Length: 193
Image 1 (cartoon, rainbow, N blue to C red):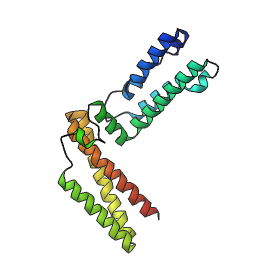
Image 2: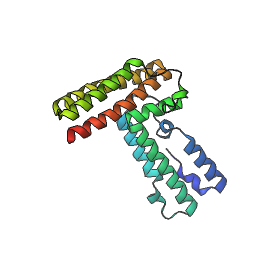
Image 3: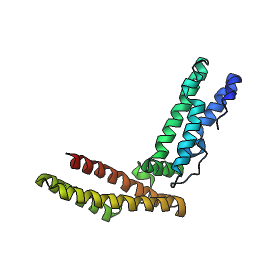
Image 4: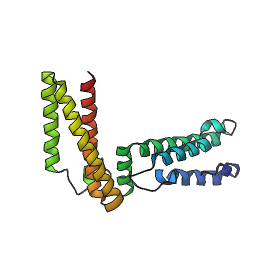
């Protein structure tokens, strides 16, 4: 939990405490284990507890510095919650905590597998052909296929992060999932049309 009572001390203690709080990683902020498989109910409960303590509305009668600190804490808690709540964002964040940025191609010596690159092209071509012909059944079947691939990739990433501690392989999996998420959104848009 966050000790708001530190606000009653001098400005030095306030600033030091705020810097330490904001330096905590998202898992530490909510006192959760640094792992992909996360108890989302525990995350929700921890988020509510933190927000209950730091929400700016609770500090409306405090001074300007305390209000600004409450806003920073609340923003940090919101960002942490959004990141940890979403599996893809959580996986990318775990990779970053372990020294690999999934958005930086040069941060990993492992490159995207050729078979996945070919699969990407096949999915895109199938979608384009189906949309050209107005074949909603093929689009729906493709969405199901991509959804299965997405679930399998999430399982692989979880295993690499939580069991094998193989961050480079997890980075490749997260990069695959970033693409899969984009094509899933495109498939969903085309199914809705």
